[in-house]
Image (cartoon, rainbow, N blue to C red; front, side, top):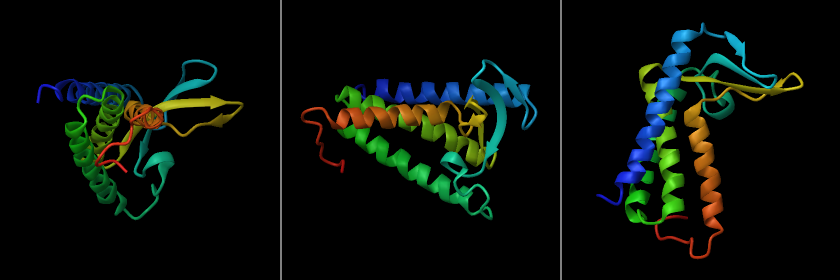
Length: 160
């Protein structure tokens, strides 16, 4: 268990930072309110009932349970992979980042029914879909997984 502690600690740190920032934004902004931070970045309070880029956000409501189920399965799979490969630092760093992000967003879905998003990057009037720290951790983790897959000896049992 000691070999898993750093990875779970990182996941918990991601969850705590994600939830604290979402709470701060929710308490400080009205829904839809945007505040410019720089010429290319705003803080804005939005709610996402869908997945990435608001995929299925306008569905009839079934998507909430569907996305919660997918996240819970991902959490179990990631936990198994962490246990099997706890000494593989880059691989586990990526999994722990994804795990923390998944937990942060699934907590929103369970408690609120939607995910709180607030980071709004834009250029020349074009806005990237708003996202949050959990989404950032998932993205960083996914990029690290790709980097890790190119390392010699990266093929692992239990990972396809």
